[in-house]
Image (tube, chains in turn purple, yellow):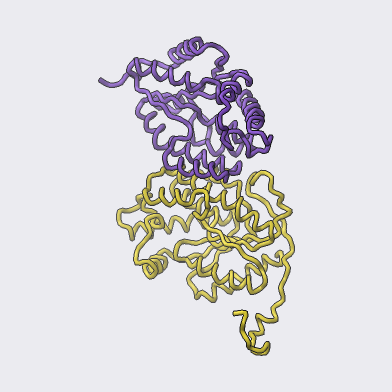
Length: 228
Length: 254
């Protein structure tokens, strides 16, 4: 199954994804983008990674009990993604919505590969999904994103810190190494998947104005006005 | 049973004098890349898969095989679909509500399979057990193929699976299956009838058509995966004797 964007597949809708490390500020940016599109009374829908109800119960149970291996971690997230993709994203894109995704398949490509799953296998699993029409990658210096997350000394979750990889017995150190490896994966995917790289070390407003400019240049927004 | 006071002369000779054979290790491989970090040379047990529709006699045969294998001195473990600690409850819920789309349900089953593969099958094989699987990836693939899913995609997903030492497919005609299912439950199962595929509004018709499609896919996969096809329409004893022969071959390493 060759990977094509929704536009290339002649869907009336468009999908915009944001990717980046935890603490890169991507969620803030996609929220501001959503508000801007909504205020223009466009057909917009926002979707988060890991949010399908049914699968959520299995994932949270599994994560609490630390039951997951790299393979089951990958499959259970793919299941969750497929549920959202088939029941939510696809119908909305068929109905001509602009769908905003906080993380998309690239999050899985990066994490699962770092966990030791073969990239070809992971990509094969997600090959049922079309590519985003626009993918913003928020590229912050590793230290900047680490500081944003770690400054509050939050309780890092087991899998979030990559503790299953046995990189370090210290969750904070483990998190640092894990995030560093994911960043490498993102950078490696950047050209292959045409990421629009945004310098996430800049001010929120500077980034947002660039994001808005790119979106209006690449998507014919007036086409997506809500029917009166 | 072990407290019997009978003299040894009264014991069934064929069991009492049975020699315990230690199986020789045979090479193992995965269909695709497999599970990262598994040392295949350490898997000294045997994996035997019994496939077939509901009502084909799988569980009856497996129960007998366990008796027989244990009698021969082999430790056994049984696995089956939808039995993982990870997602079996959620999977059951999803099936009841019939709310998941195809790819989602398919990946849910794959997760269930992977969990059992990593946490039960592989450790048991490492410990030298005879693992009897009541269905394996073939049923999962066939169900999806009947529903029009992409074969290349399915083969990639199940590239994680270990190649079994033997796969036995019990065939029973759809007409026979209907009779057996009614004898057992007085009802046809929604999924085993393929009602979600919408072949017919009539459950009876749907069951017959669906099971015929399943059988066709199994026979198609047979050339790739080399199942041993066993006629399941004979007596329990006849079938079991054939299965025992097949497994004996597996035990001596063919």
